[in-house]
Image (cartoon, rainbow, N blue to C red; front, side, top):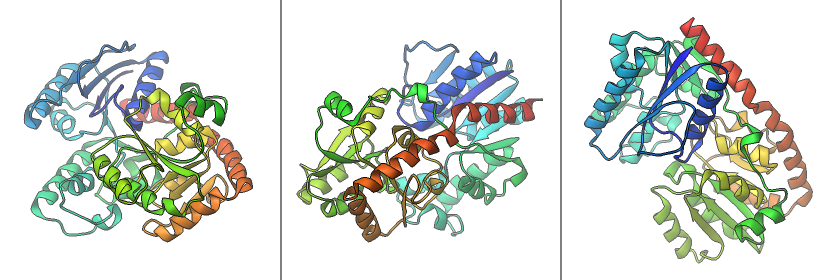
Amino acid sequence: MRILIVTGTFHPEAGGPPRYLLNLATDLVRAGHGVEVVTLGEPHDHPYPFPVTRISRKQPVPLRLARLSVEVVRRAARADLLYVNDHGLAPAVVNLALRKPMVMKIVGDFSWEWSVRHGHTKENIDEFQDLPHAPKVALVRALQTFYSRRADRIVTPSRYLAGIVAGWGVDPGRIRVVHNAVDPAKYPFPESRAAAQALLGLEGRFVVTVARLTPWKGVDALIRVLPRMPAGWRLLVVGDGPERARLEAQAQAAGLTQRVIFTGEVAQEKVPAYMKASDIFALYTGYEGLSHVLLECLLAGLPAVATRKGGNPEVVRDGENGLLVPWGDEEALGATLAGLASDDALRARLAEGARRAAADFDWSRLLRATTAVFEEVAG
């Protein structure tokens, strides 16, 4: 099968989707399929076993989308299938003429994210779904609905997101849930917490969160509840993003500059070391499709405290491999983190549960399920 992957982000950019697509494309080639990638991004000389075309984000948006459309048309002629990840509008429009089988992976609600970034809404993603919207938001939402309905199949990483997408009027019979997964061979964890701390120059007890620093990741709440943690515990914030300056100012204003460590953007191969160097993983997010970092947390054998939101409960089984807290209840968040930090036996039990649960998100299972969707559509 010849597969054209169209995506808004790709390796070596940070985040779960770029890693997922790199691993998927590489394994598809190993299985004998032909793969090409068209993505937004800047030139990069990394050697891949498949061609990658990058369209610079430095261009104005209309020109960027026009070039993306041209590249899709040029390469789709020899493809049996389009696999679209993010930036679905341009491929959906040109495919009106190409009429190629198209599978689209949807990992979130772009219209909601866009509305949050531009200050058009303060509601969470679930509230946003049924509200009346201002004209600009309504237009973005209509475009999202258009390109989602144009796909022959929609892949979502969680049952939660499948429900969101069905709410846009997409036929549920065309939606396939394929949980995200991780390949242990791709995560070089140090042998022990002590070895990881020595590698990174860290010492002590840490709660770690790994995220792009956006408003819905809830890092501000983690900073606010940090004083409730036992003495000596610190918060390790791994990642960068538009909220970083505000979060650093918040930590400074609270007198917590010695207890909150901001790493900034970290090379992907170093993230496992930060996880292994820590004692608790925290994901206080108001929105999550199905978090790659939660899966990495399972591999690291790290007990997680996560919100009972989005796809999180599909990964974290409360009391077995982590603890779930209500989103918006910082009192519960602080009490749960403080309690877990004070209970060595509970941390050890949840860590063992995390290692066992990692097998439920095996990469080979994802590869088989994704390939089955492609074959279902392309014949």
